[in-house]
Image 1 (tube, helix red, strand yellow):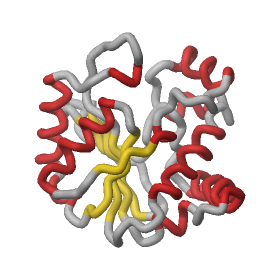
Image 2: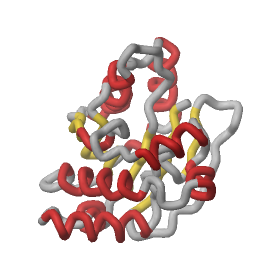
Image 3: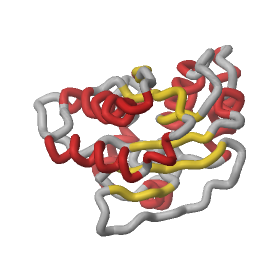
Length: 198
């Protein structure tokens, strides 16, 4: 399923769910690797960015509408990063793009994990926008900073909603949130005004 979370930076982001019968849902969590939407993420990102000399994520995103999108259905591969969209996944992307076309108006930048499935999803969503996709290495969860605590939480929770991770393994993905937020802040330096897809 493609998942979309949207909100405007600095605003409270309420949970909204789409029809369970659809092939997409609208919500306000990026799922899995604890890219926890909300001001807590911005506070952590601000601290990480300040330490590294990168403008805080809050400054990068201020005044922008941010659409968080998860990749479409994928096939299998020996190496996780090589997994590509299936035909079904490509169809999901096109249907999703058409169903939510109004939400994509005003998007001027797209940042995506550099792995195949994420770049393919971003490319399909960007086609009618004419926007180039910027790959961001640290948005991929299998990185050197992935800890044993994170692996244990992933093994326990699997593809569970983010709230399950937070309740059962509090703090296990804080380093992921900080690293990913810092990567987005760095990639966002100099991007044009307008809304952002991540």
